[in-house]
Image 1 (spheres, protein in one colour):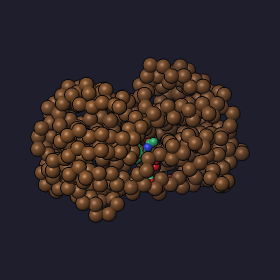
Image 2 (cartoon, protein in one colour; image 1 turned 120 degrees about the horizontal axis):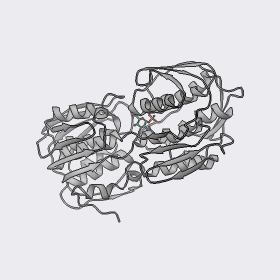
Image 3 (cartoon, protein in one colour; image 1 turned 60 degrees about the horizontal axis):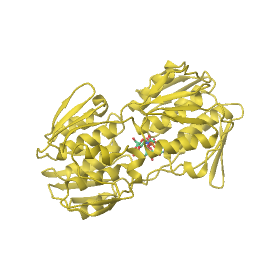
Length: 408
Ligand code: EPU
């Protein structure tokens, strides 16, 4: 493989900016919107609420003036974790919201206690009616001091946005610091919100009511997980690969680790080039909240480490079930020992053999695709819907850099 591949807008940024349309009195236009299944699903969820969602070439305009209440669609929300971000905004705007436990990937338990506790601290009452949560705050939400027991990305985003529509000041402590949160806060501030500290563990939000975008476009930042995955793929099996349209500062931890393992990487302002074909040295990886090593890059990193000479270790600290897919890499010939659901060691290098595979979730699906790329023989990957949830037309883009891949 060789050549260059462009990075699309970030899934985990755009899903939240689509939800953010609920804070705006006027239509909100997003650009650099990736064409992925999760974006389509979030669009459907907003439409089901009464919003008008218009898609253009890489853009999406959302007008939420027709949304009259907070009944989140049951079936759609059960398939999309990011649906939880809608709940805080609907609650703040309409004084009540009802929604099911949000779904998403099967990567471990995904509780929502931090969200419910946050809503309660802001004056809401929470009850369960059958399979749905009912949250009400008839007089609106009130600013509060909220300390997160776990660093939560969507928790931080949800409460940060709800606080804009609350009365008074909200302080979020032990907040997540992901670049997607910083970009979201900066855009909201540019439209009149008062938010200080996004990107640090303490975020202070002054409630102020609905915002107006006045036609200003919100450009989606490049997907740092997609960029990082391409970088790992390049280091693993490309002669030379340039990853363009990305923000190298957003995946510095990965670049540092890859350099430690011997990869040759050159960073420019919006691109990064890696020379492959170098025998990787083993690494000890521990997933961590940003700016640590992203859990969403853990599966492609494991495939890379299966080709490192020596023993590597991976400690998945965020998701309890996110190493289950490694059993299929073992079936392909990788030497991986699962010590407990969150810790593995990998002895390499071992040649991999092609196998029929099923994509269990977005990130493991792409890791299987990488494993198939280096395996001897032809692999078939089923359930590619999961890959399409997060990566736009992946087969076309990887074919462009020399991978022999077809969609059937
Ligand atoms: N947690 C709780 N209670 C809560 C919320 C979270 O205990 O109420 C725990 C979780 O169980 C987990 C930890 O806190 O152990 C972190 O979860 P977080 O809330 O940060 O995860 P998330 O916001 O649901 C987002 C991404 C994930 C990514 C994680 C961590 C979106 C839509 N999803 O999930 O992305 O893995 O942050 O970085 O932004 C993916 O894209 O493949 C993906 C799974």
